[in-house]
Structure formats: C-alpha cells, structure tokens
Length: 517
Image 1 (cartoon, rainbow, N blue to C red):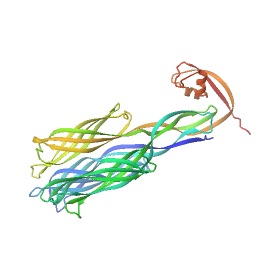
Image 2: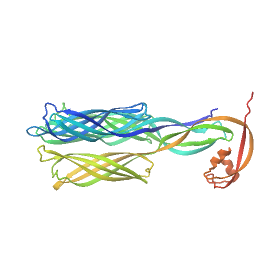
Image 3: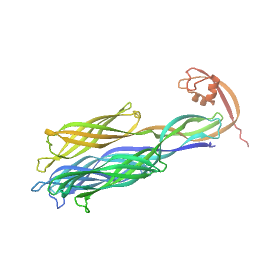
Image 4: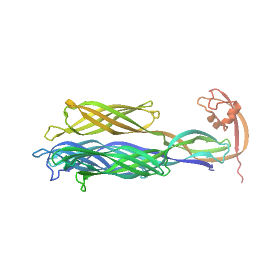
C-alpha cells in the first residue's frame, strides 16, 4: 500500500557533460581583379560568430563563421598597403554521451591562432585555430517528501540543505546599429580591419523579464585614398529582454552575450561614414536559493516501510564575483621608435588556476599585437609581445570543492609612447567569476507499506554502544524511537553517546495481522 505524502518540488539544472577542444578551419581568398597582387602579408585578424547551435541525440552541432581581415603589402609600383576580407564558414559536431535534443547548450568559441600563407600573387590560404568550450545542461523536475500524512509514529532523519533551484531559462536576439563617422578630409579607400567585442555587461530584473545591457565596442582601421591609415572606434549601447516567468529581484542570473553576425560596409546614405550592425543573442538562466528539509532515512515502529532512494547532483552556494586586475608595465619595443601606434590587439589568456583556502590564484599572459607606423615601404609594421600576469581573488565563497567559471574582459587599455622605443602599457582586466558547488543528495521517491501489524508486545533489551553507532541507527534497528531511548536512559544530548555505554532499549514487537478468509 502506498503511503500518503506531501511533496515539495524544485528544478535541477545540471551539467550533463563539458568538453574543451580545438579545431582548424581554413579557406582560400582570391584577390579581386580590382586589387593588386600580394607581395607579403602584414597582419591577419578575425571575429567569430555563431549563428546556429543544436543538441542532438548523443552529440552537439555548432555552425558559425570567422570574419577574416588580411592587411597585405601590394606587389605594385608603390608597394601600397591593401586589405582583403572574407568569411570562412565552419560546422563542428562533438560527441556528447547522454545528451538529448531537449537539453541546452552553452558554448564559447574563440580564436586561438590565425595563419596566413601566400599561395601565389592572386591567392592566399587562411587557417584559423578555434578553441571550443562547451557545456550541455539538462533540467530535471525533482519532488522531495516533506511530510508523511497517514502514519502517526513515523520516524524521519532530516538534514537542512540550501540548494539553487532553476526558476527558468530563455533567450532573445537584439541588434547594435551605428554609423562610424570618419573625418571629412578622409576619402575612404578600403577597410583594413574591424574588431568587435561585447563589454560593460549588466543585468536588471523586472516583472517576468530580465533586462540585459551592454556595449558593443567596435574599432575600425581604414585606408584613405591618399594612403593614410586611420582608426575610428565607438561603443554602441545594446539592450534586450529575456522573458522568464516568476523571476524576481532576489534571484541570481547567468546572462551570456553571444555574437551571431556582424555587418560592416560603407554607408551609401551618408558620405564619410561606415555602417556597422551586430546581431547579439542573449541567453539567460535564473536561479533561486531554496532551503529544504531533506529526508535522509525513515522508519515506523508500527509499520514495515519500504522506500526507494536515488542519488542526484544539484547546485548550491551559487554566487558571482567581479574584480579588476591592473597591469602597469614599461615595455621596450625598439621597432616603434616613437612612431604612431595605430592599434593594439589585447588578448588575455589564463594559463593556470589554483584554489588554496579561500583564494583563487591565476597565472596567465596577455598577448599584444602592436600595429604601428614605420619607415618601411608599406609604412606600417606589426610587433607581437606577451605580458605575463599573476592575479589573486579572495572570497569566503571560495574553497577547493567549488566549480569556478572565469571570464575576462578588457575594460581599459592605454599605451603611451616614450623615447627610444619605450612604451608605457596600462591594461585593466575585469575578471568575472561564476561560482557554485555541485553536491550529491539522496532523494526518497515513494514510500510503501509492505505489511501491517495489530498486536503489540512491549519488551526491553540491553545494548552496549559500538563504534560509529548513533541513536538514530540504534532506534531504527530495534524498532524503537530516539525519544524513548533518551527518556529511559536519561540522555540529555541525543547526539552524544559513548562507545561501551549501556543502553536500555524499549522495543515494540508487532505480529502480522491475520488475513480473513
């Protein structure tokens, strides 16, 4: 017979699996007839856009493109600086054991390396090494027993837990659009390179909605018709809503901003300007702190109870942290020699992460690519350098068992040119940490009565406490109760008994109810 119980429900959002992999995508660029041959490549950069992702049975699929910009030295009379732009499409399928179409995917795809190889004067090959960091999540509705209603003498062993229950998740798309104005004295010849990133991310919760706000940082290097190299940049505000029912201000939000597509082209409606449009996906998961009383074990002196237990993983102690690492470094770059710096690509990389006590210690490096004016024929040159860093973050929420997801955002960069190739570098890196614990809990599913009894015989036995005994285990073993054992033996603290201690155990023996014909 099934026992009547009262249950409490919550939703687990658990990681089914995660993978970090690198792949190489490549494509050939044919030089258009209107452009001169390639003599040598100067610089190659790119932006990654993910326009489709799917979770399938036992695998995931990610479709995207890399927008590549190649600055090259032309093979003509003046050996001018020119550029090429192309998009390389890619599809990556990864095997994921246990994943199903109804699950969700969190992906982070970044460029690790870009190589440019000249095949001939009219054709080049570009190879892009992409770093894939992927996680597959599943949502599970879980019901836990709060109370047993139709058995008066049920004994339960409970523990207080604080877990993070999923309120909901959702996504939406938004667009950042702007016109980058160039100086009126500049006649645009061609766009040399474009970099796009999402910065200054913030969220705000309103009624059944999560508002995501950020800036799209766009920087464009271009060539004028009189062979001058110029740079223009802008921060474009972007905002979008994700609809999630029952969300409130006390909830915790994980908001991801994903670049899906970028369009950059000369503005046909307005002279001396370039139109830029970025399509962005906002993906949000919302959690609440939920305090539960979890039944670890139960029994009844009067009934023979059977129940099933299953083990599930759940999230607890979720929190977010932000801290800023300020890098200040004097660098010697003789090649610059006081010339103008057109642009610096700043790419932070975490090499190692260690947790000791309540501290996370990061070791990494910042890859710097300087593009600067030079006295070479092309009038432009590139210098790559690495700036090592060590950074520590302290918090009471950190311990050796936590899961830490770290993102780094370059919130400020400034390079001051000094004499004799000295460059003062000022770089501010914002570390964004998402911290949580994954714990295992045992959930009692259903409780059934195997047999009932109706005749009671009272007895008393003597028991000597053994190592690792608890009053709960002793009471359950002999069909007694903690309260009765404590009362008979005048025990004040039910959590404290000593090995070898003599206990009188009041025991109830029940006989099986006789079946009627």
